[in-house]
Amino acid sequence: MSTTPRDPEHPTGSSKAGGESAPPDLESLPPGVLQQVKRMVQAEYAKDLRTQLGTVPRTINWDALTPEDLEQELLALNEWVDWLRHTYGLPPQIIPPMWHRHAELLWELSALRQHWLICYDQQAKGNMGVVWHSDFAAARERLRDWVSISGSRLDRDRPTRITAWPGGEADEWTPPDTSEQPVTERSADFVAFVLDAVRARGEEQDAAMREIIESE
Image (tube, rainbow, N blue to C red):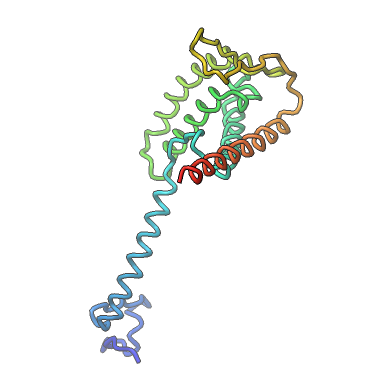
């Protein structure tokens, strides 16, 4: 049985003039029920706050992602880069097909994407689009430099050359094979790259867990 007093003008207590619902009288609730309602509201607020904070784009540290997050972020970045090159007509001198095979390009494009997500968020200020395009212009120049150094082209690709420092490299380090390979099936290569990266990250994670267990 309801403990809420009824409005004399509206015996049902469920609506006001014009069909508008009357707000509930919280003070009329029993103390135990009121506390329960407050806890439910606080829980929903905290849940919504966590959801909102979780949608804020963060800088991605590719070396710290779990295998699952690594796969998700690589796929999302690939989709965004494809949109970017089509939307702005970017040539392979800025974004080559095999950008994913070059860490310097992956990190640069990832940073640019996160910046774009922040600037074009629904709650961003009206001038943030101009800010992003200004930074995009600077990023294009850096991308040109990265691509020039990497040696990646539209129809061929090779790993970025790394100059060994005399007496400055780890004993297990070996320079990458920089022989050129033709680019024929870009999409298939990207899928293979993601699978290899996820597998390798999983092995790294398992090795780290074994090391922790053995040290205890």
